[in-house]
Image (tube, rainbow, N blue to C red; front, top):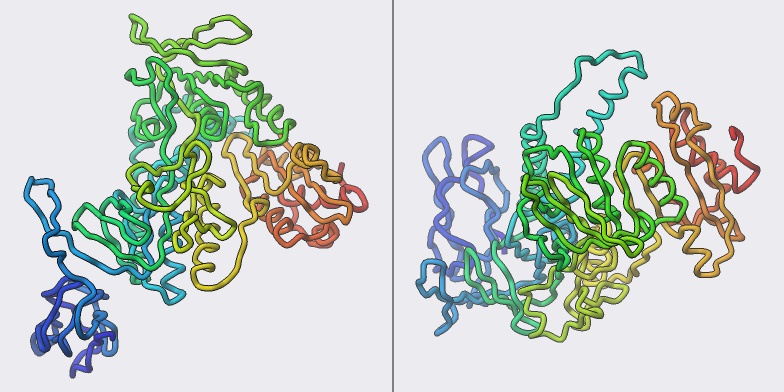
Length: 562
């Protein structure tokens, strides 16, 4: 039952005063739960019967009115109890008892996959308990998407200042980059969003437990942290995310050799930096550091950048990188990091059978991330892993081999993107609630915040060719778009892919606003729209979105402006 605020005479709003209980406390009838402050003194809210406080729905200082829920209360014997004879060693060395607790839906991890799962489950009538050992928001919010985009926003302003002369604006003398302030701004943005996620947990009445969870079997986890708990769950969603991958290269632990997390807290702009890896993370950092004024070299093991993209996109971004002064070494196998006598870092690599060396003030290793399963105790369950332990194996509904346990986000290693984690969370919660919805990789867009931006969804031309799928393509270039020319952004193009029935199978954008333009193409792919539907849509002028329209025209009657 819910204990609600009764009608008190006087004001319409009252203040929650002292709360005398904690969640899962066992009370006798008429024990005081809390006090409510009124103009005529404090009023006591008491337990209506013997039972347990399942959940507190308010905090001290909250404003409440008559009828507002204050707590969830269960009459009778407790399902939650202190385990007799069980104990755990606390941080102080003292032995603490382990509390037993029931969870309707247990969610492990407070990143986007975890907290979206919790919100959706709560709104579908489930009672989620979320366990998170660190800050809410996970990798994306704390050390991934958001902080890197905060850096990139600063880099874009720096680039704009360099180019302002082209627009008739004189910004001399030269500007300076204050990395201390850049990092502080990034931290403010992250802190605000973390606070927003924490508010959403309270708003949606989601119980949040701070601690680390480890499975003991297919139905229980032990949580160590603020409380020591043994949780018995009905259903579970694992959303523990991923961690930075570091290859076993000699010297990788030298001072000045950073991973992406360290780079986001570096308060000094390096005069020069070598970036290991020409994938998404490596290239985003390469362009932002270059825009901030650093000398940048990218060392990539493969013979092309961004191997997951169409080969012509790889060629286009390589041209853009070199045009901006970024040195790119393809086919470079990094073998060692060393420290020179003058304090510079030396990166040794093999290329074409020869040994080469690069010197720089800093090195950033950006070769990807791996599923975070360490410490989860999966060996105590029937949950199966992917080959070489690269993630948790799941089916199209995000179910693991233990049918009532699901895995979403980076930990299942399907698609390591934040919005993919959110999409998978929807699929998992739907299935838990009895609705069928299958995962579809083709409807998940990807965006790379280089300069110019790159975005893609569905099939690429290279993928269609490799799979033997008959298709036709249409390409329209930014150089023929009026808005792009006003922005001094003539680089790039939009490419659309359609089948024999003219249904849009995929699209790629490389150019200004690619991160926004891909949404229209994603909708077309998701709804299996025909090119004619895009052709018949009116796009505002002048906008870069018209490039999508022109590409669609290229699949029907032919582009008008190229």
